[in-house]
Length: 193
Image 1 (cartoon, rainbow, N blue to C red):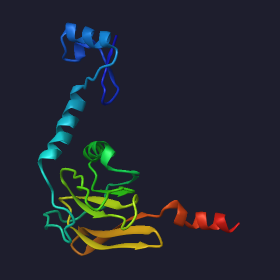
Image 2: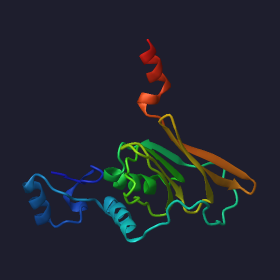
Image 3: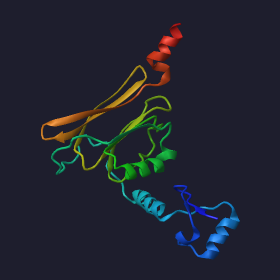
Image 4: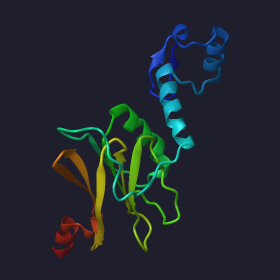
């Protein structure tokens, strides 16, 4: 009977688990168990290392970097519908995909909520004012020079714009935007019929 990793769901023959035969038998006899393969253990160690280090939040201008030219950015865009319970998943993806920027909509933070951080990234956070839900958070890799441009909320649509230095004289503007379904054009058109 194979032992299945609780992290990645890959199946391993008992001799490839690093466990003693008696430990494998006990896991299988138990029926439900938590066991991680060596790859998932490495990822978990990297994720839990995040808890020890705080990172600056919301700097208007990042520190200068030594990189000179970039052809593009690896950006992940995600409507989280509440980031706090899913932050470990996001940290894992940031590590696996080597992302330059992460744009999250519906972070659902309250004004007094702590900002979840990801090792190696600076956060740009915009909370919805006066209502629950919504909110934006962007993470930009610390090695990228970036500047916060502006945050805006108009007719329910939330935006947060920043720029990333691509080369000596070239900056790329990036906007994280969320338009709730109730304020979208499609919703308005449907209600007019």
